[in-house]
Image (tube, rainbow, N blue to C red; front, side, top):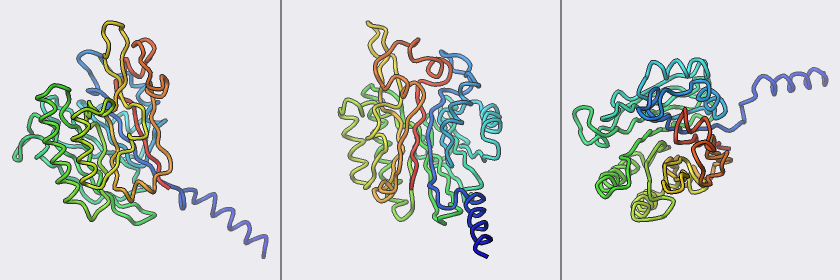
Length: 291
């Protein structure tokens, strides 16, 4: 009888590997997928490799211009995953997508908050907030994932528009205060690394909403042209996964990938940044794993 009990317990551990395991989420801006006007067509093999390396239970993708091609990439690299996407994508048709593993989460609902898009009746020039509500099958918790792609740029006009969106984020956080809200995506916090006025506005949003970003533990999430006189491109922090303080306490690991990890966020020439930078995205994937 003891032998049978031991065999049963062993089989239970083998057959239910995720019963007590943590879960994960990630965010990745894939740069005007599938055809960037300057960088050209996306290297699908490299993108597929990155996606598999950063496979998470829930994944947000930013700048999904070619939706059919994106769904094909997901089907080929993460078979079984479900794709939910925004209908609107701003002036550049840069849609937001949230994909998830249906073995881990049940779908509840999705919606678009058009106030972020400078309109309330139709698709505006800016991207909306795309919200997907999922229920975890193991811990029975319900989570609201809010994918964002805020106004880009470091000009005074661009920052003013983005600061208005920070205020909208504050309202969004208040609206979902009693729920497990997770904000993730490209928030275009151009001043985050140098901690300028843009950083102050973003920090005010976090503090007033009792939220934290995992990017406070990252050296960078993207690269840009930077110092043109030397030909070196510089790193910055534009992407975030924003959590409530109590959820932050459940974080086990935080990762970033691609050229950001390869160069450890040091200034570098495009040739040093490699294929992921040249042919996939200037951004890098970021990931958080919970206990």
